Amino acid sequence: MPIPMSFRISRRSALGLVAALSVAIPLIAGSAIAQQRSQKPEQKRHAITLIVEPAYKADFKHFDWVNPNAPKGGNIRLWAEGSFDNLNPYTLSGVAAAELDNTYDNLMVPSADELNVMYGLVAEWVSYPDDFSSVTFGLRKEARFHDGKPITPEDIIFTLEALKKANIRYAQFYKDVERGEKTGPNEVKFHFTGPGNSKLPYQVAGLPVLPKHYWESRDLSKTTLDVPLGSGPYRIKEMDRGRSMVYERVADWWAKDLPVNRGQWNFDTFRIDYYRERTAAFEAFKAGGIDYWPENTAKSWATEYDFPAVKRGLVQLARLTNKRPTPMQAFALNLRRPQFQDPRVRDALNMAFNFEEMNEQLLYSSYIRTTSYFDNSERKATSLPQGRELQLLEEAKKLAPDGVPEGTFTREFKQPVGGSATAHRKNLAEAAKQLQAAGYKIVGTQLRNPAGQPLKIEILLNSPAFERHTQNYSADLKKLGIETSIRVVDPAQYQARIRSFDYDMIVHVVPQQSAPGNEQRLYWSSEFAEREGSMNVIGVKNKAVDFLVEKVVFARDREELNASVRALDRLLLWNNYVVAQWNYPFDRMAYWDKFGRPEKMPSLSPSFDRTWWWDTERANALAAKRAQ
Image: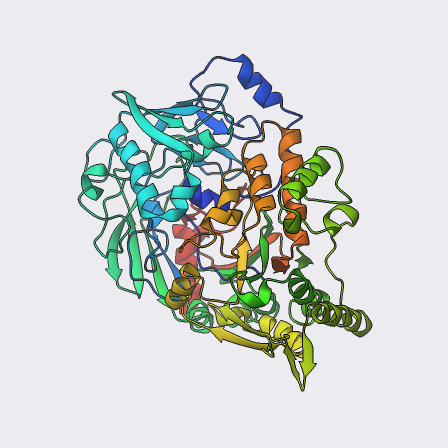
């Protein structure tokens, strides 16, 4: 069961790509692309890629996963959980309304069917030298904001500087971008702090574009309910604070006929209604008040889709394979809390988790256990470390002996296997031994440390959807004498507590890219472990991890990248920073039968997508059937 989400139609900024496009696929042979680049002079390219050549040439007309003649029109009603109090998606403050990034254009945009490939949107072309010390973009002369003013190099430079000042996550993500420079009337160049980071040009290419003339007199770090000026396919039409958002298609959008947009962004409007919890929203969907429902819960998928509209064929069901990343979804420990400092305690918490039983009893045997931070890729740590990976781990051990557990070198990391009562009892017994070795003793029914303090854990959730799974785990922790409680809070309170690191344990997702790079600093850097708003939510401060992260960032070829990532993966696993949960390689969805969709769906987003359209014939037929 993935983290509960509502609706995802949006394009992604570079930072958003970290969380959205992270499937592990094989890199092409060796360092072929890197070698080819080193032999070529800096050249203008219509696309930018990390690991493969783009599937589409410079003269392509449209993606093959769209209907280029899809009709425009119609309205769609969607939903989101919780509430919102902010229309600025780039600040860490407040709760931003869903899908605001559809109102902004980016320099380049990802293909929904290719991993780590982006094609030009605001930028007509991109170039970079063979040492990756800078990146240059040529802007389209026709690019405009919604007020008609042209998008200029000054806007691009302002955007990067403003984002780094307003948001710690952007500051870290673009840490190695030293400065921007206008190098022509429609040309901007970003200089890096040094050469060798082959992923940085790609990451800058995903930059959203903000209007300098609008934001320079406003504070991008603050929340706002003023409707901001954008440049994307949609603009805000209506807003009822905390309750609903209505977006309307920009009919004269400057980029509507570009190849990267043909056949997309087809609805005249889309409306997002907010519900406090899933049950009320699902009842609204069953009654026809919501048009599309992404199903994230195995139990619901198995038991709740027998209502009349499904039986009559008015609501369609689909389960589609996706090739998106398999993120590390887990119970994440807050290492800033004293009870999690001892690695033996963390190991015991992992031993106590009975995934197999939970999968059978609660998840309808639908899921598989996540076993790596880089699952389903050649960068997943397996067997014992060898060759370059072993060398890197040995170097890390010398740098920080306490940060590299001995098992890292001598045993393959494997998640404990429960399931049967016998196997689970054995795991709990091993967990009890680890806790005893860490100095804990049972006093009455409580587990206490040498100072007599009980071991307490509060598991913080932002949705009741995860409560029953957490209760199962909590019950097993209590068998060990650990005082465990579960607290469900609203999304606004949850975000505030995450920003200030006010939690013991949370359900957290660590997404990964197919070619990992700068984003690893966001997750693991010691520098940001104590800085409020950081994405290092676990609070990792390990010099060995820092060392390996830098090796990942500056890896020059496939072999070096694979070795560095495997070493990092192995070290993270052996430190037991999380209790890994599960993953599911399909999209489950239900929708009222009034839409058209392409015959070929993009592999990274096979469910509801920006490629769907309003089908008048189907909609009329549906209305007639419902009237019966």
